[in-house]
Image (cartoon, rainbow, N blue to C red; front, side, top):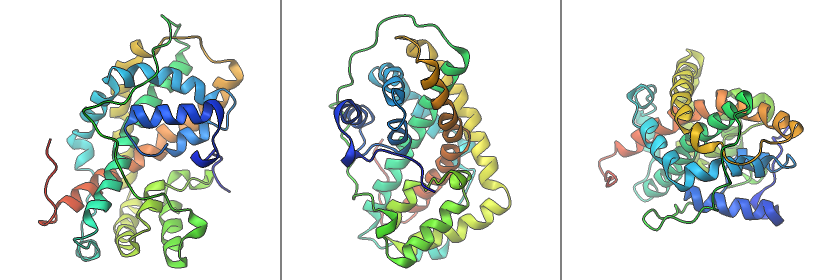
Length: 282
């Protein structure tokens, strides 16, 4: 089973327009899986985007992302560095590896907070307070990330496909057919992916990932609550749209994204631990 989605190449009309707005507002080169899934729900992506526009446009969601990314409870929750992982990283590949990991870290942190807030709105039926905000525009001071294309799992070499499926099977979303796109993207480097799988296997088995995910989810809820006043513009969604959105939002904000956030931050830390890789300028 695969998680339903409308891929970017297949999008048209207002779905394609919202995808473009998301890329601009999030400053990311591709649209994350959860939004591609919302696009399969008639009216779903349109409602979600109507609520995310304001905190994205005024950068309050970006500031919330930065605060969450700096919480030591998440940063230090997992360690994925190992001699095998170190050996799997070639100097010429580190920049691309880190770009991919940071792309997902930025998207996962932003989406976790923003979608948690939308889930709160759906549950609390918060009344509208004003008109919809203007469409998002690109932020001149923050460039859009560039990363290699996302591979399709069926097109992967056999060994890489086995690794991606093995990693995906450990996650809570596996029963829903969700394959974390980070693993697909890192399949360009099968040895690196194998080293990740080796480190994550015991972390899932002993509950470390689950504990880190719960901490991440709880802290994201605190940040999401602060955004609610800025997300009340516009009419509520029809009951059928609200009902269709609740399950995927609950799945992604309850386990799928909270699992990936500490994993992604641990990978970033492991990649930056190599002396040849300079620290980013903040």
